[in-house]
Image 1: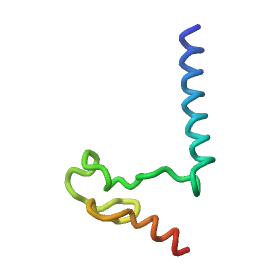
Image 2: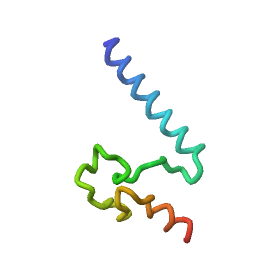
Image 3: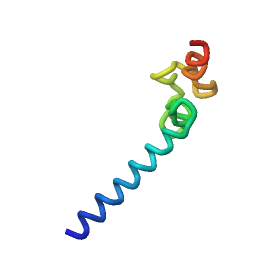
Length: 68
């Protein structure tokens, strides 16, 4: 029972930490969420499925939000 409470407590702390980060971040966004930015996730050099940016380009979702 102690282990279950410990696990639930640690998960709650982690979720609380992410919530605080979202609250205090500008526009409530995480940095570098574009999948093309990671060479591990994009070993084939495919464009990002979210914004269409190539691995060597900046995330295009940032530009679209600034224009709006």
